[in-house]
Length: 69
Ligand SMILES: [Zn+2]
Image (cartoon, rainbow, N blue to C red; front, side):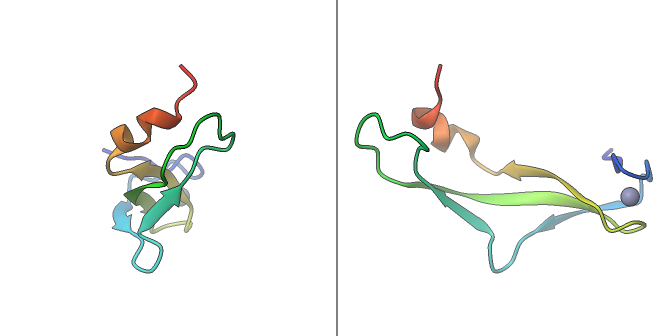
């Protein structure tokens, strides 16, 4: 159960972003040629204070080639 980190209400909704629902990204530092990757993103919205938190990639493994480790 998600809880708002700002007001600690548990009255939160899981949401997807309609017009910006996909993040299209390239590595910040291009050490080798890597094609852009994309993933849908979702987040939680507190319906009490309006805070949006927990931005999360739907498929984080797609960004694995960007990872430093
Ligand atoms: Zn809140």
